[in-house]
Structures are given as C-alpha cells and as structure tokens.
Length: 293
Image (tube, rainbow, N blue to C red; front, side, top):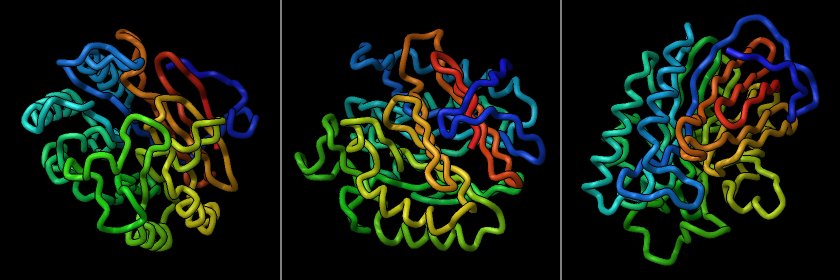
C-alpha cells in the first residue's frame, strides 16, 4: 500500500502515530443499478466491477477487523421486486470480503423498499446499532427520518412531495429516541467511539450544508459533550471527500463508489488508534489522502 506523508486537511499535522490500532474497509454510495445509463456523475452499471475490486483490495490487507457499507447500495430500481434482486446481487459481491460485514441504509434503498425489506437482504440487525472491535465501539446511526419525530420513517410510503429526493435541501433527521440511545451508548461504552451515518454530521462547503443531516447540530451537541471519547464520525451521501476536526472529533465525509468510471475505485482503509484518540483514512481511487485526527 502506498503511504503519503502529507499535511492533514483536518489540522495540518503530519501523520505518524504507532500503537494499538483497529483497521477496517469502508465503502459508501455504490448506487448499483444495471438497468440505468450513466448520469449525474454516477456509473451505475460499473458497481459490480468496482465493488469486486474493492473487496479484492480488502482481502489483500491482513488483519482487517471488518468491512462496512454505508448506504445507497442500490440507486432507484424500477420497482420493489427489481430492487430486491439488485440489492441481493450487489450484497452478494460484497459478501466476497473475508472480514465480517456490516451495513447501513441510505436514502436510495428507500425509494422502492422499506427499511425492513432492506435489512432483510443485507442482514442489518436494527435501524441503529453498535458493535466493538480492538478497543473501539462503532456506532451506526439511521438518518432516514423526514422530521425530528420517532414515527417519521423515510420509506416508499412517504407521501409524494413531502421529501424532495433530488434537490437541496435534503431532509434527514436523527430523532429523539435515537439521539438518547446515542448518548447512552457513548456513555456506557468502555471504549472510545467511532460513529457512522449515511448523512454528513458536519459538512461545510458553501451552498452544500443543506445536503448534510438536517439536525446535525443536535447530534454534534451529544458528540461535543462526550469530549475525546468520540474519535470520529465517518459519513457519505455527498459524493465527495471532506475532512474537518471540530473539538475532539474528526468529521469525515468520503466519496462514492459510483463516482468515476471503472477501473477507478473508491473505497477507504480506516485505522483507528484508540489509545491515542487518532484516526487515519486512506481513500483509494481518484482521491488518495492520509488523514490524522
């Protein structure tokens, strides 16, 4: 693996910690749809080849603790039956990874499927959940709610017009019960934490803030209160690489698998150093960077 000693975009430092660590592979925004022509910068029909290449890269790295898929695994299949076939097909490719596999749901699965249908294919255990490896607790959030309300699940039954799937601002929330669970999970963890969310919890490019989590400030309040116990929050959705350290937390938004034509690939190898409260992200493919916390 090529390693770059370049200044971190989060804080300008050069990266170089050693010590106890846990590493994992990460992909987001695959947008698999074999029936759809390339458009809007998404190479839908390249998804199988690109995920196959990423899985091969993951399998070539010894000691990966797990691999993580962060949502928008499919794009917007014609109907629910087709979406189930498409989702099972791309999940089957991802299942070629030797390491344990974990999933999140993005907004695009929910164009034609319910969360329960999506979980049924991927095996995701719950809408939001946590797991631990190597002295780190990993926390998976579900931002697919259309209001700050526990009952406001985004799903195909959401009334037409109440959510604009294609234009900014995009509506997405972590509602009260999930926020309370997040705070309690961080507090109860014996380890420092890394958070995953499909939607950026911090994203600050002019004119683009509205594509992040709508109530991101409320989530960041919980993260801020935890101090150095939350090392990072790793997200997708924006189809861009963006990094910023705010307080003790590194907020990373990573580029989409669907960006750029195959053989270009977009996956990341992430290494967390729990004792040092540091994170390294090497984003493969069109963009490559080495980023400390």
